[in-house]
Amino acid sequence: MAIFVLAILAIVVISIGWNRAVVPTWLMIVSNAFFMGVLHEIEHDLIHWLYFKRQKAIHHFMLFSVWILRPLTVNPWIRRTLHHHHHKFSGTLHDVEERSVTNGEQWSIKRLLTTPDVVLGGLFRLHRMFNDMDMEVKNGNLKLETSSKLKRIMFLSIVPVTIFAHVVLYFYFADLLLGGLKASFGLNLSFPQYVDNMLISLQGIIYVILLPNLLRQFCLHFITSNMHYFGDVESGNVIEQTQVLTIWWTFPMQLFCFFFGWTHSIHHFVVNETFYVRHLGRKKAQEVLRKYGVRFNDLGTFRRANRFRE
Image (cartoon, rainbow, N blue to C red):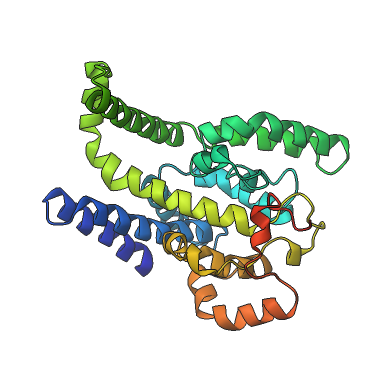
């Protein structure tokens, strides 16, 4: 609760400083992205019922708060089902949580652009994911009722908050593009006045919440989608599910997902451990992971589309 309150207070204070022209825009976006990364870790632990399990009102208040401050993410109550499925079937064709953030795809401009986007990015890969799930049902690797439930809640998880937040960003970046075309080539293109009015009225939300979250979400999805293996993981073999990603050039991205790549492998082995405990025991835990064959900085995963083997 202390970490939760301090992170929110930091976001509020920094944002007020930005609104009063004391804090520059870039610093506010970077700072808010960092603290929203902390809130994401709290949300993840809440999904595992690690905080206030018996005090439901506090638990759900925290879950709601961390979602509203990170509206580009999916509904956390629905994500709970997707995430628990991920732990049971990590790295399989029907691990829809990881596949939704580009895990298992060949690296390309398309993957790069859709890494932070769970709306358009999800729609681009939805057909293939559904076909793979149907094939898994046919092969006896997935129950039909589980497949139907996953397909249904994947859509429900982004309605309406996640879709609205993404659409606002689409209009924001499109408006910037039109402004750039006008300045560079004299093209007099613009949105209708009511769209401009909407963007003006939402300017505070765009800069204080949406842009920091776009930065945070890109960094998290880049790290998680490349530290989780996909497609050829032996069923139930936790050692093959993840690697530890600590290489120096990932540090800026790790900063905005609270060093997810350093500690998330620990979570796959010891699920009911809070994120701050994972960090306290990180060095010793990494020694144990290395001893028993968990990979460290396997950069071949970028070439192999996140496959464990060649």
